[in-house]
Image (cartoon, rainbow, N blue to C red; front, side):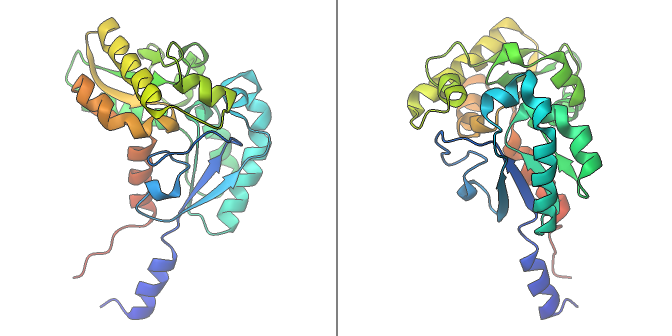
Length: 241
């Protein structure tokens, strides 16, 4: 029998995911990892000072590691049971964050690529959509446990999405951003006729996941699917028995 005190204790533990945020000002619309209303459970946020989107995507990302570790340790000290980040490119930090933070770490949506690949029929591949394909290297894929020849397509050829994020602009034309994501998805499947599922690298792509799925007819996995899975393990659902 579960007593009332135990129920109360479990309710207080619901805010178990700590999210390490880049320091940005671009819009965080519903569905974005950085919008707390996107989640069906409470989350904790910590902004990593100086961690801009261009730095996270570039060679400077490793210089940010110590700042991410300190912020992650603070989240755990404040009660977080697991840590994630707001950028898929931070797969490069997975090993170091896991070693330094006394909690499970799910650094990047890209970590789903090998899992999803194991679900697909023979001959089908996982494809990745990213905010900038030229910056997503084999090193990022390898760090996430993904095959280094994983098909990748970026939104950088569009008119809105990549520009707003990398320039950290305060306004975004959502319809144009959606169009950029859909065009990138179509480019991915037109270049590779064996795509069986799509993983979204960028945490800001989640608001467009349903449209991408409708457009391509393929399963779409994102930081949203990853963190919902993560949370379900951190705080197991109790069923009355």
